Amino acid sequence: MPATAAPKGIPFGAAIQSEHFEDTSYRDLFARECDLVLPMNELKFALVQPERGQFDFSRADRLLDFCRDNGKTARGTTFVWYSTNPAWVEAIEDPVELERALVDHIERVADHCKGRLTSWDVVNEVIAHEPEENGGPLRDTFWLRRLGPRHIPIAFVAASRADPKAKMVLNEYDLEFRGPRFDQRRAIALSIVRQLQDAGIRIDAAGLQAHLYAHQEIDVEALARFGADLKALGVGILTTELDVIDFQVPGGPEEIDRAAAKVVGDYLDGLLGGQRPETVITWGLTDRYNWVEDVMPRGDGQPCRPLPFDADLRPKAWYGDLRRRLAQG
Ligand code: 9MR
Image (cartoon, rainbow, N blue to C red; front, side, top):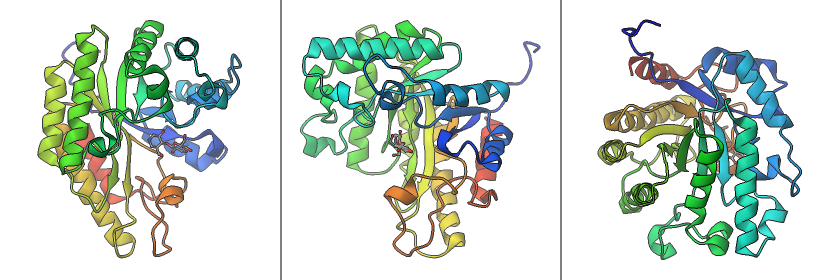
């Protein structure tokens, strides 16, 4: 490519699930639409190392082979999370042994995936859900109880040693909306970044999950400021799990999609207003398979509509808008 070539737009990606991989129309949609495809669950602790020392990369490799064969980049999620841990890890009480198990896991998994992932969610959802009520900035997890706050630097150091070329990401939800709770969560994210940097530990980006509640207001200015504050620290930003949660939106598909377009549009205003994001990733691609239906279904019995394509693989208008804005980036 000549050095003067105009930069391509901001890459678009989506999370794929191995359990639906046999659905060829689903698989083809990822091949057609995405620059980046990531395994939604297949690199989580319990799926990769269900028993101590027994690693199973078969599901993840199948998806990463799909990426390679279709010219897609990929990213990894996640090393430290409060959920989807195998029983054997949670049974370790001795902090020295637990630290060894965590570092060993990170080294083995990062090494296995080396060269195939552009970034890793090193820690996921470590910020307290309600910081004020929690009485501290970090979520009360078994990692925190057993290892203390140092489980965060431990994970970042191990991951960046194991895969020096992959970007190291702090991934978090509920950073997008207006209100004191969200202000607090954004401030905590920035303080984790600064603490890592003060300790000389590499952190490359913050991941905004962007599970967007259509009935909640995006704080466009605060979001842009958050992105700018990260930029001032030399830290990037990316959107890791975008979808729309519509259980409080009255009406039919048209009203739901209009509310989705509004919340996604506002989100993009805030995101793009701060710094150029590295990528925007949705948490799935079609409403045919989505986690929102399982966890936050609509009260009126209609299926929810969280993703860029409906269950029949027809694109929503907001997806076209999203792609146009990324193409300009
Ligand atoms: O969508 C994921 C679902 O299939 C899994 O069963 C679940 C537990 O591993 O995780 C879901 O993904 C979550 C993501 O990893 C972190 N942010 C919230 C996502 C939705 O719950």
